[in-house]
Length: 115
Image (cartoon, helix red, strand yellow):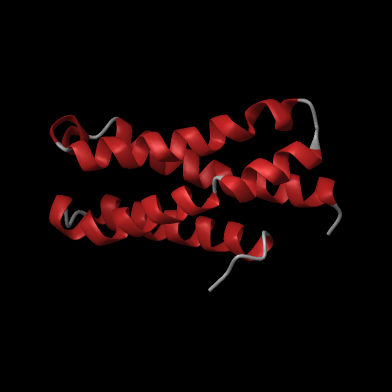
């Protein structure tokens, strides 16, 4: 994949991250759970860090930031998957955890950081 194609693919995957972030942010559970608030903030911060480079189609800056912030995104994803059963067993939460894990797993693969 070219750098532009890579950026475009990552942007597509980040739509899933954004939807999970929005789901968490607006959930009743997040109103009372500092861990959930912190997770949704990390998801937001990752996308915010890429925003200017995406808008400017600056693939070098975009991919640099995507790599730089990936560890925090991965940790937040793992933390959400870990606490999700305690937060809620509702199917919406189960699907949110799976969606986030899938999207971030693909992001890691594309960036060569799987495993």
